[in-house]
Image 1 (cartoon, rainbow, N blue to C red):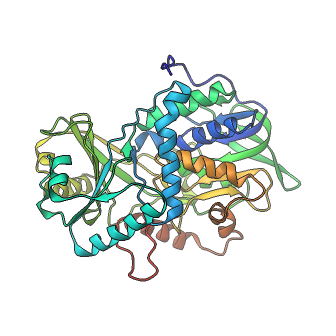
Image 2: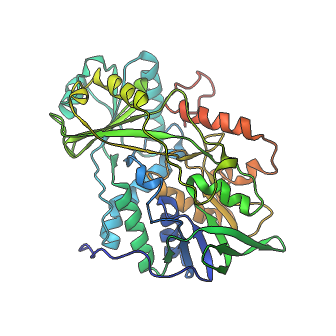
Image 3: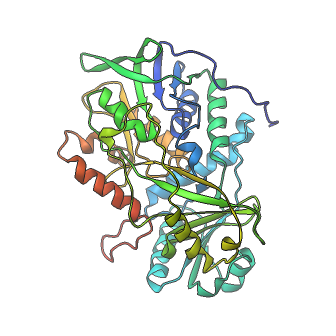
Amino acid sequence: MTRKPAREVLVADVRDAEVTIVGGGAIGCAVAYVLAGAGYRDIQVVEQGEVAGATSGQAAGLVGQVRATRERCLLAMSSVAMYSRIERETGYPADWRQTGSVRIATTAERVAEFEALAATALSAGLEVEFLSPARLAELCPMLDTGRAMAALWCPTDGYLQPTSLVTAYARAARDRGVTFATHTTVTGLSVARGAVTGIRTDQRSVATDMVINAAGPWAGAVARLAGQDLPVVPVRHEYFVTGAAEGWHGSLPVLRIPDLRLYVRAEGQGILCGGWEPDGLSLDPRQVAIGQELAVPPDWDVLAGFAADFATLAPAVTQAEVRAVFRGFPAFSPDGRFIVGPVPGLRGFVMAGACNAHGVSGSAGLAQHVLESLQPDPSPYVRSLSPRRFLPRTWDWESARDQAEQVYENYYSLPPRRGARNR
């Protein structure tokens, strides 16, 4: 399909609608696109800023399908399938690059984990293989691969440009009749007889039969408008991008080096390098207000640590100038699982949040999960993501915040030998 000309996403003010999606990031726009394709005909997206203007726009755009559970593999695979066809189907580019990805192990314990990951991937129908040293050096000539004890290759992985993806969702959803109200802040929800009946905004109040809460790190604040406490914890995540570095170009595979807590990809001729901090920094969800800017200065000590660790494999990273730093507060849950589906006891209020830094990469699959959660008989996996597990509230905020930080900190941690479950 020929690329369609770029058009503004905003086509309407906030209005009465059957379905109102709060949040114009990757999840909100993907849900709009998927629901409109499934036959929902009266949908609006309400966004406090610009589409893709907050957390989604800060994402690194990596899309990996190798996971430790079959269900998570399948979710990621469904996302990749959409990214591979979205431009062909809609005419709008997501700037998807299917470069493949390599996971590098530098310890024997990590090799064992990779073997388990590979078995799970193959059980889900995902193509993976272990690379020979010669093939690893061929795929990654910019690396010193001498420390690698194993390298797990997934040829269908890749990366995309988050803003391009979200804009593609939004434009394609608009073509299906979805309207967008940007620079519109939700200030309240109207509830009658146990059901959502409308929303109040800084512009005006409107009627709606369903609110889908896809507000990212503000999702907890939106839930409080409905009288619901849900543990959606914003946790800081950051990465840097360098200027041109010798040997780097956009066709190189995405790298994941869990023993160094790092992920890396090319950004043009530069290096994008980020990682998972050993001491997570979260915000108190009770203090996060709708419309509040979640700004934080770069933590240069952390970023320098990422660079120093990666330099042990790629010295060029320390010879290139840092061109930009990206940081945001993706939302995490205490158990490391998404919070997706209708909220029990409040008809018409649906969660699509706590994506644990997978909001962009998993947006297509998550949108399908939201759609499935609205059906009479969702799968056991989708039911397991329900906000029901946190209601009624038997947890406390301090523990929820600490556990969410641990989910972040332990993202690349080796699982216990028994009962292992890698997020």
